[in-house]
Length: 190
Length: 233
Image (cartoon, rainbow over all chains, first blue to last red):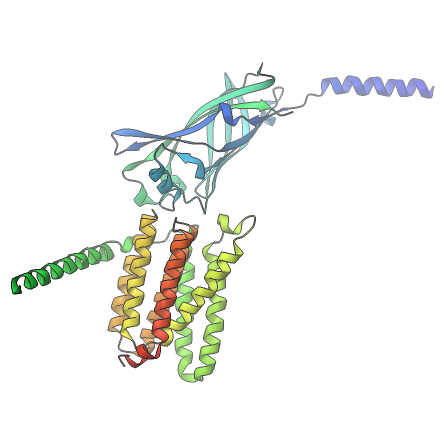
């Protein structure tokens, strides 16, 4: 009798476990991703740049997307506009003030599935100021290539530097609005 | 020969006048550089809203106590208070920055505090000398130039209105006590700006060290018997 009861418990446990799904966790793939930006120069052209040191984590719950989450951390010192002197100036307190505000961070608070991806809401912190933003994060289809499971996402954010307490005097020659382009891949964490 | 000499003098006067006009234009044209943002999140904001006012307040309090206390008590008490204040204010300048996260940069901060307290302590004690006022104002300009050359434009330019204010008020002050307060405020601004340039700008350790050494030299000159004998009161 005791043996039958034990076997029954084991069967129920195994069956239940097969129905419980775990969310997939992906690490930001630095090699196959980029966070770049562009800003207007004298309102006649665009200056382009990128951040070379970015890390992050995506948690995707495909059964219940509201339980998914996205987190991204950008090391601002890694700013690269292909001009070392300009990069050095961008790191200074006239612009990013990287000794005071070394990172730009995004942490999602709400995720909703939409056609072709997700609508993500979260806290975006730049230059010591946190604002809630919502943006479409398109992608998310998993592929198994190069020995790992991978997903990719992309979006464009349009932010005003004045909303993030940048020095108003540093907003002139370089326009207030900056476009941040995120194209990133995630590798499933082992 | 006389013509050459006259030309040289005229050229010198022109250059000095032009430099003076540019400096005055920058100094008067840039007071908005000293407008801090609220809440004070950056090092410059904390300097303008907290650190410098606190240092000036301490100077005013010490000046008020001077007639009522013995010279020894003022020297020892002033040194102790300025050292303590320099430590607290240095910490305040770096608040929230990478320098106080992880493994805080205690050694540079401690060295800065001790050096700052020395400069700050020695200069205001020699209040009778206009040369000290001028030296502090010029050193502020030099610190500003150093910060600008390091790439932080606003940080360096902000030194100019400060230098002008310290120079003019200190020079015009007839009251010796007031001049002492002004020199003390100038010395505090000076050491704080060098710290800002080093910790937040790209003023290197060598540059900051050279600047600090020159400040200590100014302080030492101010403390010397020769200069004391040359005083204006």
